[in-house]
Length: 306
Image (cartoon, helix red, strand yellow):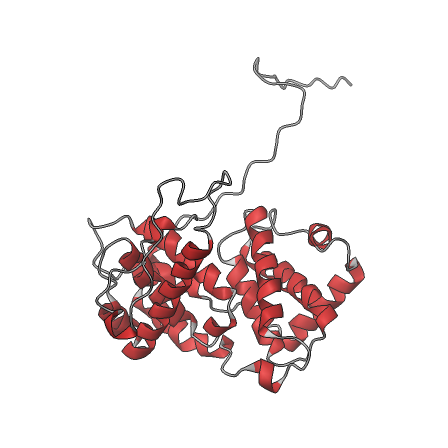
């Protein structure tokens, strides 16, 4: 019996193995943008919210500064591995929910963050792109073992009662953007990218943890629109989410202040190491009194290096 291979090789191909094609994303489903989905998310988000300051009630060793350090480390990993935008906020949600119910030592914070990243990537990344456990261990400079990571993954799951399909601010972005009168005024994809950046930056700071996911999503959209010189549509967002208008205004001001602080911090040097003043860059004016902050022109988000 003769076995004959009829496969042909194209002239431009080589003997080197080809890289695996990137996984394709699902086509957007308009059914997922219906009002019923928004109402369900608004009703469900309370189950995943952190409503108390766990640093004063649960945690005895770690501080908010330690949380920020591990959050920035987690964000760097997600950026380095080009993870989906939803992975980092979901991992931070796991981190906060775990810290609100279980005491953690100083030496265990990074291990906890690693386990949360592993779980979030398994849930929100395609199966072929989720963060491997060995890679996460490498990012910790091999300070943890695979057995440690696996045991803490189970510990996090048990403390979260295996309820890991949490609602994050990213889930609200398309539902809110499609209901704002933005057609013909601005590229909504650009607004969504800016809002996603604000959500990721806000997730590093513990002060934003006490805001609901819908509040953070609404104010990130408003900050992105105001930064582009447009109306933030805060009243319309208030009508869509039924969140108190004063709460939205306070969160919006905090996000804009966060962006302004980032611009000031990065104003010292430019990427080539020269001072911005030498390159003809004018520092932003000092923030005005709160009484006049609503009438002032907000920070232009295009000044931020995304």
